[in-house]
Figure 1: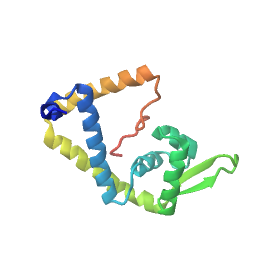
Figure 2 (figure 1 turned 90 degrees about the vertical axis):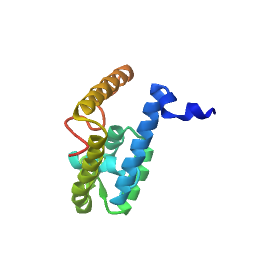
Figure 3 (figure 1 turned 45 degrees about the horizontal axis):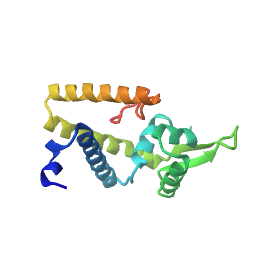
Figure 4 (figure 1 turned 135 degrees about the vertical axis):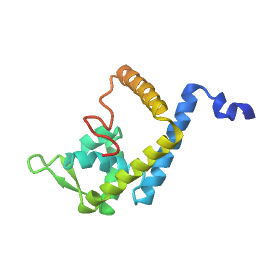
Length: 163
């Protein structure tokens, strides 16, 4: 590959957006690992902080991952003391996922991580630039969601990453 084509300013908009998304995800994972969470576990906890006791299959759907993948992640989280799983009393086919006290206590640390990330955005962009970026990303999100006939995003229904 030609050296000039590797420069960010030479990437297509889609390539640049994909790279920034990957880099942002890596950055968030690094922050989450500092507080003891592994890949994807933070997302699961955020959902459970808003929907404790949700059926496991609904958690997989909300996180947009395969049920087998969520099962593997939850096994590790259960082993590490973040969650507990129990069969639904009325329908034994349903497994519900509950936060442990340890996970509930971690919420403030996770909120701090996202405040730190927001502070990094504030250091990078002016308030006006942040508002413009938000507006443009929301428009892109709405377009892709509409085109895919998608359901609301992971942090939908009033949930926010910083809560």
